[in-house]
Amino acid sequence: MDIEQQNMHTYFEQLKEVINSNSLKTNSSKQLDVFHLFQNECIFVLDYTQNKIIYKKGFYKVTGYPDDEITSDFIINNFHPDDAYMVNRIIRATITYCIEHPKNSANNLLIIKHRIRKRDGSYINIINQSSIYRRDERGRISMALIRFTDITGMDNAKEIIWTFNSSNLNKEAFNRTVYKVYQGFFTKREPELIREIEKALINKEIAVKLGISEYTVATHRKSILKKSDCHNTKELILFCRERSII
Image 1 (spheres, rainbow, N blue to C red):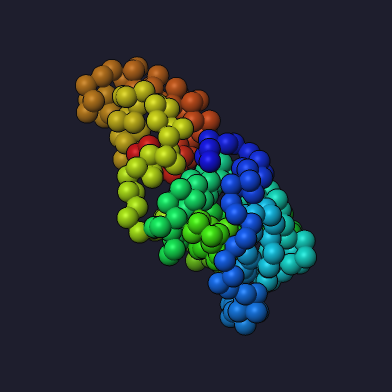
Image 2: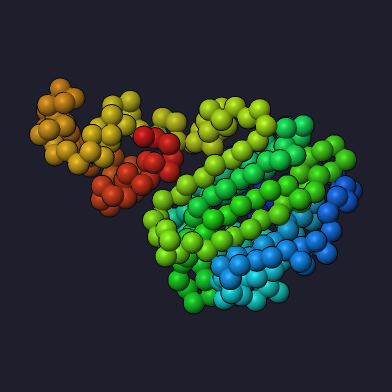
């Protein structure tokens, strides 16, 4: 599987060809019917062999959308546009890892904090938790159980925060896979300068600390903002943290 595939819809279609459709029947939807949900929670089961959501519950209270309107395409299309690229990249890397390392994946858990759109057009912060629901005959993930928890009011920060837990996972190597596209995004000197900007230092202070001229610092600032498509320091720091640049 190619995690560099930019289109999530295409990626999920490719999954259908990779995973065995004869999933092991280790769970049933009856178990989910009695699954307790709080007012701020909803769940769904995504079947990768069909690229289809086969069970969903609780979406109206969380998003304002009735359960029967929820599809896999709908979920992807309702990620906040500023979050979608990184969230999709994390999801692709995780699914690909589960398929390529089935022996280590039985208890895998992916948690991402990001934003989704509600029916009224507003966005809410959610905790997105994904775990393996069923596996195919080779032990590879074929269905995922996903729970969204609305944490708006408790955490309104825009920053994407995520963690992936798996047995024997080389986290450093996995993170390199997720952030590969951003390796070399900035010059060797620019991340150093960004770290000083994060400390709220002015150009003169940064120049003294890094041993360069104020003019060079100012030029780098403009270049960094343009390259990252950020409008201010706050956006820049958020951009860099989410992509593990700093």
